[in-house]
Length: 192
Ligand code: ADP
Ligand code: MG
Ligand code: MG
Image (cartoon, rainbow, N blue to C red):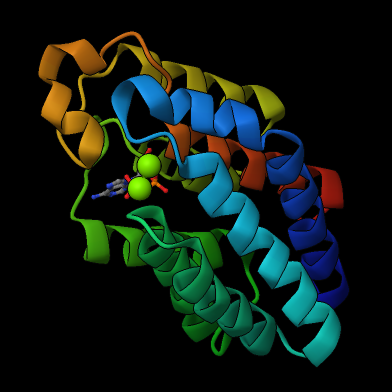
């Protein structure tokens, strides 16, 4: 992995989020407040701009810049969570450039901030299986899609969707879907 492929990854993620921002907000409507698409579109677009402007040259710098920008621009619950993921990845990138280790650090950052475990209908339900698959060298698009789809059947116990109790069942979690875009973009960019 190098800075150029990470740049491609983040640009593809931004494009994917922007192309699907209405859908992401639609997912957030029955089980949340309908803003996840706008939040992520605003944040990822800012990431793309700031990377073009500052032109980071190390993995530490590109992940740090991404994390700080997501925290300040996404807002909501997901901004600090995605922000923590990338800031934790920046810290880990000082020690390793192994993708599995970096993503595991990102997941740990999300969990440290949000305290969610697998099975609570959040982005963790996508990050966790993706980290495991990367570590086993088995990540495919199907692994990602199954994890995203799998959130449909879960009853939310974290985040806004948890206010709905059983009525949260039957809907894909919006943050799981945007994380799905993140990892699809990672595959497309050839980071994995
Ligand atoms: P808000 O709920 O503040 O409007 P967003 O709509 O942008 O924020 O993001 C909602 C997403 O954040 C959820 O779909 C879920 O994936 C994620 N999320 C919420 N709380 C947590 C948590 N404690 N841990 C992990 N992810 C969470
Ligand atoms: Mg929302
Ligand atoms: Mg909101």
